[in-house]
Length: 197
Image (tube, rainbow, N blue to C red; front, side):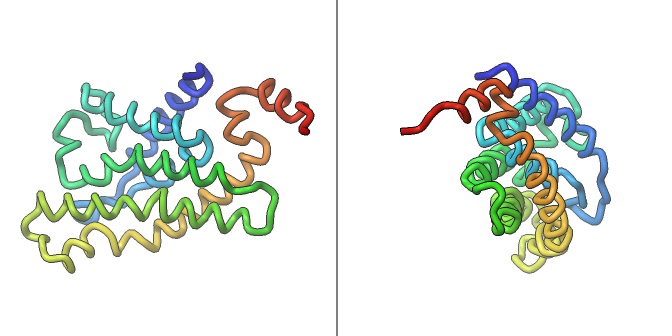
């Protein structure tokens, strides 16, 4: 592992912890901007350090640091939103992997990034999220109630957050692509100057 990557993972974990305090309770699953940070983390840090960021968040939260919405402990990771939480490292990894495959400075760059962020950085979390929510909340076990409590009301906001994140990613990665953030300016400069056969 690279020192820079670990530093950025720690920084994004701290950013996540702060922004996760912004929460609007509307039921068993609150409205947050956590998924916006997850999209940015994976897209900017790449799959491995993006995923590592949320392993750090989850691990430290289990140990007692209130990094997830100001709450800590195993109870948070077994509560109503646990299905979403456990998906975060996977979402960040998938986001980083697929964004890394998208060519920069093309006409389709923004929309391809948006599709990746919305699907792999957000929408996939509803599968384990809603399944776990049905498990721990018998009152909303019918699929219609579970989807209304844990998925459908959030999709319009997630759409907007994916648009915002995509705009940020397009701007940032043109100056600091994943390799430059993780490995430093010298690595990228050296690679760009290496003659190709």
